[in-house]
Image (tube, rainbow, N blue to C red; front, side, top):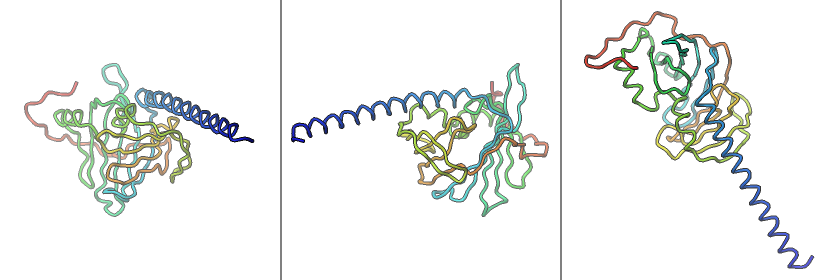
Length: 234
């Protein structure tokens, strides 16, 4: 084969590879829009749960469990009790359980909060503190992820192996402020997140998941005293 023909073949291969890359990038962007819409609009499945483990960073060794433990009607609409449990095996008495009453996992408007810290009684937060939570991004990781999703940079689909299994997940990077630096999402999972890398260098990986979640708070919560001068949440 002469040099001219070699040159044309090389050019054709290069252009072909570039076209394939553009096509893959375009498909990934389309998939991102679809996945972000799913995160925003998915109806929570009562009983679903997923547990994650941190490695590295400030929270090394910590576990987090997200779950949808029940539902209740309010003002003609169905709301869900979304529970997050954070525990450090080296400090079992410091386990924190937070339950939020929301319209969906990505909903930022919280209508009720119950929390239990260690061996302390479970407490129902007053309206004033609920207002503070609603104005503080990052309190609800599922809502924070849904909020950042569309602004993230798409890397592409990858095979990811975590303690909970092997998944084909969409890899995205965040340039915004917040906890997450990178995330791998699989939309067929109830909580979508397979793996994330945090801004402090730690990583969070899916360890297990299931459909039999019950409330981790079995006692009747006591009312936490409220603060004067605030109005109830809408």
